[in-house]
Image (cartoon, rainbow, N blue to C red):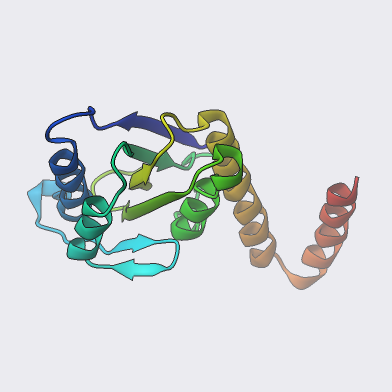
Length: 174
């Protein structure tokens, strides 16, 4: 099961500065052995710069909440070969506007260089006061497991793939 950790920047004076500091952290956190690393920031629509992420924070409506989120696929059951598409998992995990009843904007970076557990850090902003943690955990887990099945299936010889594909399709239709 994927792990999703949520917290938020304390409301009040300095919350936007704290949100910007988090964006800088997720982009610039040092790698193994203290090596300097600059990671790509991305949103649901593609890559963005840190300045664009700061603008997202500056332009957030008054009363918005700035959430810090960490999404971590299970390294034993889901991300066994370090091959999951983490950007896709992030987008599916944060596709919660319907459940939330409010819009949500976010910026993220993949951290796959300083620990054996690949994960994604996200800074999200919304007018909602809390996020649907259970729904997000389920969405992350479902996205990870679906990718794992597809990737494992693509590694098998063609005859096995066709047989398992038919079985998997029958299970989905149930």
